[in-house]
Amino acid sequence: MRNLLLGALALLISGCAPGFRYTDAPPLPFEEIDYGFPVQTALTTPTLAYIDQGAGPETLLLVHGLAANAGFWRYNIPELARHYRVIAVDLPGYGKSSKATWYPYSMSFYAASLARLVEELELGPVTVVGHSMGGQIAMTMALRHPESVSRLVLAAPAGIEGFRPGEGEWLRNALTIQGIRTVPEDGIRRNLSLNFYAWSDEWEWMVEERARMARADDFDQFAHAVVQSVGAMLDEPTTPFLERVTHPAVIIYGRYDHLIPNPYLHPGWASAVFREGAERLPGATLVEIPDAGHMLMIERPEAFNTATLEWLQTAR
Image 1 (cartoon, one colour):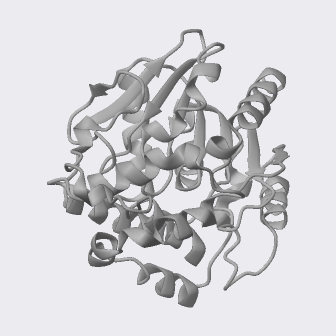
Image 2 (cartoon, one colour):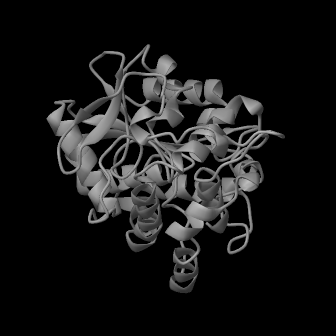
């Protein structure tokens, strides 16, 4: 989990190629981040921003992880949208969605916001595709709003690995708004490498986005949401309730996920954590993607898309 937080920090801080710093470029307001797709909004208090692509009787609701946004699904949306309607959402406090320090930013708050979006857009029960923290939110949504969910695609999900109270308090104190704001650029690629089996310059957009975004006017509100999200994952764990998630589910993970399990508190392999999760989730399927880390949907998008589509076809 500490590595999960460090990986999240990597997505918050900035980096640069030799001789150039993104801090020399203009600030990047959240509303100007380019996801590669048109963005719409729905609801109020909070307003949710979302990408809407594809068509069909079934809808996939894509939910990003800690410190991310809807744009992190850019390598998956085109292929998934060939078969389904795809909604990729910015969670409250993230991306282009509303940010406010008085939002609770709990797992149940996120799940309720997504259930409201499903109702507002008249989507009917949706397949929730959640990455990392988004996976824990997906399971929370299935537990608290089962009528809004048809199936679960859990990509390297949080909420399966458990933490004792003492471990949780240590993790809760590992991330602060000040720390998010002041981490230097030169650490980004070192930290980002925790999220990938092998880092590539192809993903330099994450570096630029985070570096310039850090000087946006509402960055501290975003950082507040991230800090609160860490506490929320600890305060509303899904680990004890996996057997109660009765929706069809698949867990897709990268063989070389170095963030789950926590290598300091729970040394071991991701396969052990996710195998236990698949055994406890009634009737769940487990898919491992070789040569992929925690950001499997970015690092190996073709494999992730194929695994997702094949499972959806067999789990009707």
